[in-house]
Each structure stands twice: as C-alpha cells, then as structure tokens.
Length: 505
Image 1 (cartoon, helix red, strand yellow):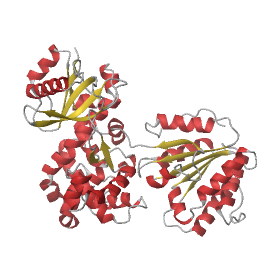
Image 2 (cartoon, rainbow, N blue to C red; image 1 turned 120 degrees about the vertical axis):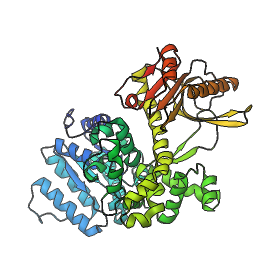
Image 3 (cartoon, rainbow, N blue to C red; image 1 turned 60 degrees about the vertical axis):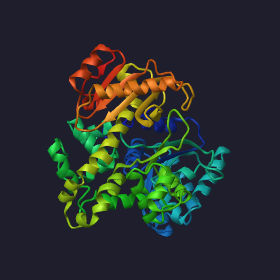
Image 4 (cartoon, rainbow, N blue to C red; image 1 turned 30 degrees about the horizontal axis):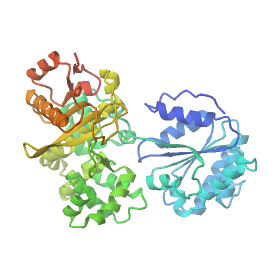
C-alpha cells in the first residue's frame, strides 16, 4: 500500500476526504476492500478520484451515460489491457465478472497501488444490474484467498442508486468500509474557488449557484467582483438559453440523475411550491390542489437526492420545515420558469430586473439565513470561543401577543438534545439581508424571545443575542455590543472571516 499521500495542489479543500481515502488505501489487509463515494453532480467527485488514481498509479474506469452493455464491456476491457501494457484487442472479456476479476489481477501485478475506481456506476447498472452481485462474490472469495485483493472505489451521482448499494438485503450490504458523500464547497471555500474579493458579491454568487466547484469552468465571462457586475453575470449565465449554465437545462439535468424521477412535471411543481414558501406536505398539496398523502413520496425522493431539506424545530416536535436546498433549482423554479417565454426570447436583462424583488425575498434572504447557520455550525466555535451544540431554527409562541416568532437561528448547549423540555440555550440569532442596517429594535426583539423561552421552561439566561446583517448596524446597537457581554454582531465581512466580530467583550 502507498502510505500517506500528499494532497495535490490542484485540489482545493477536501483535506478530510483525501485523508479518508488515504486511510482506505493504507489499510494493511491483503483482502479486497470496497469504498462508496457519492454526491451531487458537479461537486468534484471525478476530479478528486482522478487525482487519487493518478497519485498511486491505479486504474480509473468511467461509465458513460446511455452506453450499451457490449460497448461498455469492450471499452472497460481495452482500458484494463492498456493498464496491463497489453496491445489493443489482445484481451477479450464477455461478462462483468471476468472484467472485474481481470481488473483486480492487473492492478495487483502493476507497479502502482492495487486501486480500481469505477466512476458513475449507476450508468452501468442501468443495463448491468448484476455488477454489485459480482462484486459481492469477489469480495467474499477474497476474504478466504480465492480471489485477488485490492481496493475498489464505486462512485456515482445518482444518490438513490448509490445509497441503496449498502441498504437492506443488497449484495454489498456490510461490505464497504467507506461510505463517503462528497458535499459542495462551503461558502468560504467557494469564494476562494471563484476568486471573488468582495464577500457581499461572493454571497450572491453562492445564493444562485451554491458551492458546486464544477460550475466555475462553465460560467460565462469574467467573474463578478462588484455589485454592478452581478446582474449582467446572472443574465449571461443562468438566464441565457445558449449558455451551459442556463438554469432550466441544468435543473432538468440534475433531476434526470435520479431514476425514480420519471414524471418530472410533478417534481417541478413540488419544487416550485416549496420554493414559493410551502413548508409542509399539506401546504405543498394545497398549493398544487392535491392531497397531502400524494406529496409525501415526491418530497422523500427530493430529500434523498439533496434537492430539498427538512429542518426540525430545535425546541418542539412539529412538522419539519421544508425548503429547497439546491440553489440552481431554487433559482430556476422562482425566476426562470415563471418567465421562461421571455428568457427563451433572449430577454434575460428584462427578466432579471422584474424579478429582483423575488430574488431578494425568496433567494438572497433565505440564503443569508442559511449561511448564518452554517457560520454558527462551522466557524463560530473557533472565532468566538463559544461552546455550541445543535444549531437550527425554532418557532416560539407568544401567548400575550397572540402570535408566533420565527427564530432564524438557535444554538443549544453541547450535549443538549433537541426538543428537550428544559433546553439550555447558548445563542439566539436573527439574520436579515434587507437593505436597512440592524439596530436596537432588533436586539429588543431577541431580548423578548429570550424572556419567552424562560417563561416556557427553557434555560436561556446565558444566551448570546446575535444579529447577522448584510448591510451593517446602527451605531446604537454597536454601542450596546461594546458594553454588554450578551450581544454579538456579525456583518458580511465577519461572516466570511474578513472583519472583526463585535461583542462578547
């Protein structure tokens, strides 16, 4: 085995994933070991695994969409022959058991590490569903010395197919030592990847494209660097039917990845309803004039693919809040599809101008809130010294005012279980992307919520009141943060690690 490999310079971030794959290769066992790598298309799975294969001299085999069984067998056989140094056409393999066995024998005889990567396995399984069964057979035979050892990484973008490889009674159940889901870049890494100096501009790019690194090479023209650049850049990427990143084509492409999504019109309608604010199956059904029960299955499929997320209230058991998780799909459902006739007639500039209110209220605002939660989960502990547990949202009843307060961000104490009747609360936050700077009234609202939480039996006495603002703060609340130990102010520069966090004096 190769020992610990240095990560190639061309790989941005991915330190944890690279270390896991290193450990997988460095396992001293001689028997066959399997790993699963999955993730949304354009998250950089192939880029990562190609770099790994190149670093150790392994064998990289990539499936091709809509390629038939016989051409796939022939192409894989030729790739194995080339790795073995055999002339083209000298090797003939007629079934997948022979292909997999030959591949293992070749990499075990070659000078590099005995690594095989099979990329986009779901494409092969469309015509050759027996492949996992043959892998099971080789794995089991290898444990008793009757088949070659080595390392096989199975990779794919169809999340439902990849997740089911290890489920229930499937052949590979209990046989993979690594099940790695490769996420998109976090918002700070995405900014570095795009090379954007202004954090407010980086946030807007992240709001419409997210952190999938594969979008950067496809984006048209110069990367936006100022507020004035954002509109024209959106028009010539997401709103231009002639471009690779046209959101309608990209959303259709993403939905086609999952073989369970056969009636795409229904899934488009569900995604549009969720993007417009329908946050439960009942509300989605009401908006589409369908029953609640008819919405459960499509929502479960969309959640398993990562296109929608369900967020449970941190303090009480109730229906989880559903939202669109994928920025490109959200943009498509809210901006492109409602105006598709104009977009298709190359009127992207007109569409962008008329859609700005929707963009700010339904896209940028919610994305800023989610970014604030991501900062709290990923960076707040190191940058504030606070000790935080579970992070999420909550709905707080206000009986006296006969209303409810939606809390954008709540953090529990470490080890505190969500929905605990007497939760210890460390942080209460509000995140606003509106053009007005946040002031004392916003702080007073959080003070009121803290008092309501105490009245309801929770323990928020030491909770830090935190305001996140895209457009800064009034001097009155800055002064309060300088005098009080229970106030935290996080502007866009602090959110991206560029500026100071005010408060906690």
